Image 1 (cartoon, one colour):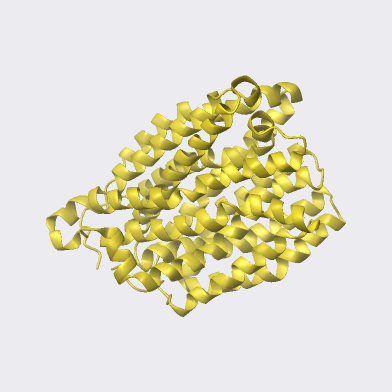
Image 2 (cartoon, rainbow, N blue to C red):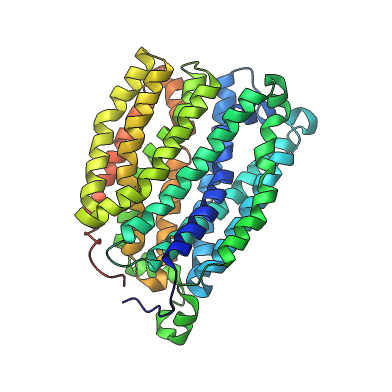
Length: 427
């Protein structure tokens, strides 16, 4: 039962959460879009593929600490409220992003440079681990039973907005700066932008109304003493099913949104500007499609959309990689991204909404954060390095397709333990 009594503004919640979350994801995904330049600055190697693999490995390490951030910040959000947790994650993200922007290169600082970058990525991962749980929980708790999918879809939309902004930033820099300047110092500009957007994001988030704290304090029975213990003991089936479900969402998301633009540059040898523009298009589809797919799931149910999208990805992913290698052109890349991104968002939006729906309010942020961060940390964060490594060991440029297909297939087993949630009230 919804125990929150205060009057809240739905539009304000959507705008504030989407803007703040979008700014945070902009910081988070810059590393992926600027991976080519980061590899040259901090992980120089005679073989560019080795350099990129190392860069993506550090990218993955940031995801590996997400479960820790999820547990710490999720616990904090369930005990003290969603707002202070969201303010904390945003501050940490701004600090770590600025660190990446100001750290001298390997040539200037030696081995200390990649060590500092690794630490910054770990802090980013810690922040992101708690960010999604707190912000998604707040959005879903603002919503009514008939529009929770629409509200949850704005979480995915904000990620798309961050992707668009990051990709377009690279496109602008590539087309306005000499290549030498961009490689030496120009790529740092968007990372330093974090210094500016951090206070803006904090202001936006602190203006939101809380959805849990004071009402929970009025009823001590509503507060879980140890949210994590309750999640893994009482709701272990929901937790395991949620992880499986998220695995099938995070792998295609990472490959489509982040890997394919770099794949187009490094493997297909397409122009950097066009490749990043394609990445921006994928983000735009996510931005627009997130709320629409969420609204669709409010009408026909979450499970039907998620299952249909996962099966479609399994069928389409290998032909997509095959066509890219057979016809390595910008129009083909555009067509592949358009189709895969559209299918992916149809399943991704209801997936992010169904996760908080399967946990009660007293442990909702902890449960959602744990499920999402474990799945993303283990399977999503290392998707870029795994995809690159698969090409190395097989010599087959289509090898990443099998990783995506297997991840989507495994995720379908989650439906044995997750029932339809779109019509009922939140617990």
